[in-house]
Each structure stands twice: as structure tokens, then as C-alpha cells.
Image (tube, rainbow, N blue to C red; front, top):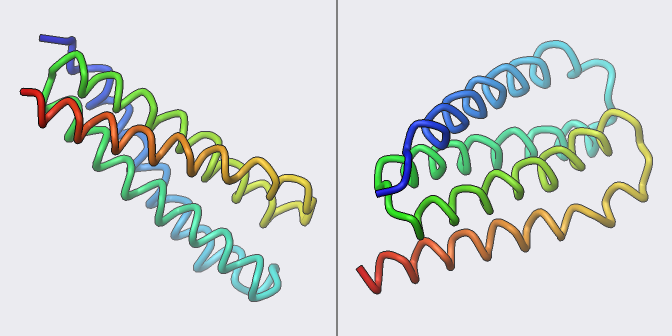
Length: 120
């Protein structure tokens, strides 16, 4: 069994950050960002929350394969959500070029979790 506590802690921390980001977007940025930038910010918060819950799941499963999947999902949160937050707040379009790498980390993480569960 893999050590589950870091993934559960990271999941909880990411969930808290996602809630704070969502509230900040809805209340603090609503009148400061263009609608498209606000939509991008909200997408970052939503995907961060989805994957925060998945991190907790990976920690609860507590197998070596689930742990690897969890770390891939964490990488996806940093790259995908992080680049979208930065894009929305700065308007630097080049940041959007790295967002798909975070999406790829998400896909690999989910695939790894499925493969790990399948093989038991």
C-alpha cells in the first residue's frame, strides 16, 4: 500500500484553493475581467475542484498505481489550471499554449487510474 496521506492532503488543499478561486472570480473579478477571461478563470477553478476530488480518491484507494495517477493529476492541476488562471489574469496568450500539457497530464492520470484498477 502506498502512503495515502500526501494525496489526500493535496486533494483537500486543492479543493480549498478551488473554492477560494471560484469565490474570488465570482465576487472579486466579475467587474474587472472581460467575460471571456472570467470564463477561463472559472474553467480553471472547476477543473481544479474536479481533480482535487480525484486526488482524494487516489489517496483513499492507496495503491501504488493510484498514487502515480494522483501525482499525474496534481501535475495536471498545476499546469492546466495554473496556466488558465495566469492567462485570465494577465491576458498573456502564450500561456494558453501550455494548457494542453496539463490536459494531457489529466488524461494520462485518469488512464493510469483506470489501468491500475483494472489490473487490481
